[in-house]
Image 1 (cartoon, rainbow, N blue to C red):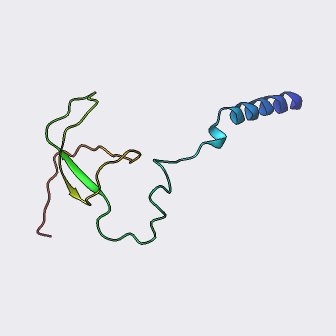
Image 2 (cartoon, helix red, strand yellow; image 1 turned 90 degrees about the horizontal axis):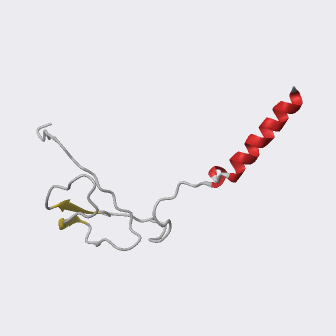
Image 3 (cartoon, rainbow, N blue to C red; image 1 turned 180 degrees about the horizontal axis):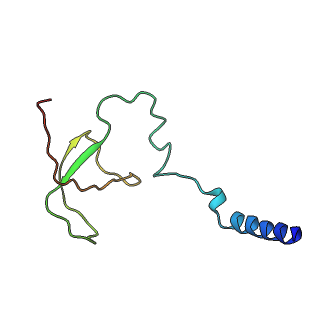
Length: 93
């Protein structure tokens, strides 16, 4: 009985090691491309609003003028596309 448990454990361990899950890392974009960021001040991101509604499954988005930092989108940049809906802001508090 113990021999079977050892064989099954060894088989599962070797399967796990060959899947690549053991070596996977959580990396987004190109780390270090823009430096280590020790002295970040002010607005560091650039924001664009869409000029029209975007249909589900669309492969492109038309953007309006930018706000925030003046950096344009470049190759290798990480782009986050989000949809804001039904926001109500109370600026009196």
